[in-house]
Amino acid sequence: MKTKNELLKERLQFIAEIAHEIRIPLAGIISFSELLLTPNLDRGKIIIYSNYINTCSSSLLELLNNLIIRSKLESQDGIVVNGILDLNLFLDESTKHFKMQSELSNTSLSTVYGLKGDASMIITDSLKLNVILNNLIGNAIKFTKKGKIKIGYLKRQNYLEFYVEDSGIGIPNEVKKNIFKPFYQVKNKVNSSGLGLSVTKSLVELLGGDIWFNSKQNIGTKFSFTIPYKQIIME
Ligand code: ADP
Image (cartoon, rainbow, N blue to C red):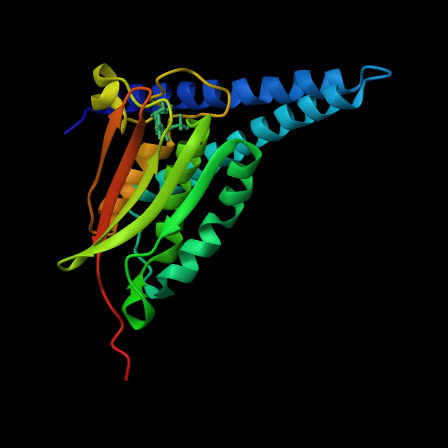
């Protein structure tokens, strides 16, 4: 059991980390919006500055979303809300905007479905599954400058195994043990908070699954996770 002092220290450290993570993109938004006010700016520069503001804002939004989920999980409010899900349709929908994003960079994004028809109608918490996939695919895009990203799932015994595989920068061996820790980043990047994977792991575990990864530097990374396979029995 942690003492009151230890809990207070942890809390203060957490607040300091959040403040730091918010400050970086916010400072970016302020400086680049000031630069946008430069008279007679050419179109190329306007696009670069606007893209930067966009990246910083998305990063802030991602951080806040993950913080909300994390605080819900910590306050034991992280209840599973199961519903019926057409898994293949769901994958199409949740990868749609990432497909556009990857087209803008030099990556191709493909989806592989492990089940067809009725077998792909399952019961799960689609909101949580969506956050898990969003975090993993978002990372795959962030850390892959060119090449391929493959998203898919397959059925194994009584569970589904999902994967998000990329041909990106990979994760160095010496930091692999830290990757699921809150606020951990290999390099402090502007569009990165280090919260995504810790939240992702908690959500996968809440759904009754496991998460792991294999990665080789400069070759790529494959994140895999499982959830129970609960098929809907059609009448
Ligand atoms: P964020 O992506 O916001 O930094 P995460 O918790 O999602 O936070 O990831 C923690 C760190 O793990 C990242 O900063 C990055 O260094 C590393 N990482 C995560 N996914 C990948 C990936 N697909 N390829 C390479 N590195 C990754």
